[in-house]
Image (cartoon, rainbow, N blue to C red):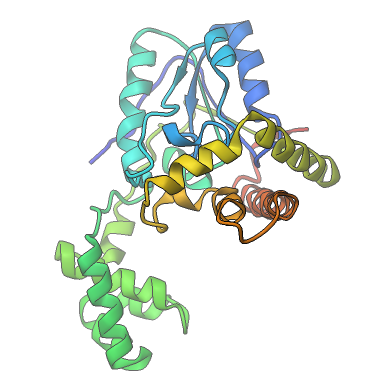
Length: 295
């Protein structure tokens, strides 16, 4: 289990929605302070998504040290737990070298793990998840919930009616690990010790953010988004993989398959990007109300 890291050098968490300018802020800060920029965005982990995830360019990476960008293959599904296990040695190394760190991204759960803690639940195999779903379909929700209550009473009581995904996950975790999901989630510790970090949220006005989202999509097309999607499609990867769910993959793949025009694909990607940014804004407003806001 990962334990809280006591850090004496500055650690700044820079969160915000896509296209908000947080990467630019981080780069400017790193150039001024000598800090190392550490990725806290689930899509920018993937080497295959430099364009679609708006990962820092090679020129930007040359201006300041970047860590955990483009380190995963699209065929590899990274979870929050795996990111936790990757980021903590990086932070420990930087702390030992007395170098400040800037953790930058839009993945809320990564920041939650750092500041509040998340359960380090072992990955559940696909076979176990499918078996849980089949059992749910066979028994129906009422009988399935009753069976879940025998192994995880807390989950059976807490999960709302009709939430098949969470019910079957609780069952699969209990079956695979021999331990209730409720027990796993209760056993959490912040990865960063309280008082060792500062949190910022880049929060532009919504109209400006949406305009930035639209501009970003246009820039992605110019930068080779279609070629990036074409390469992903050619690999015939599982559509359920995180990289294949990145905004723009499905939309541009439809165009490449002849199912829609490029203009329609661009507009669909713009809308999906704005929707994603709106969800991120809502998440950070609800989950990090005490963090400093910058526009």
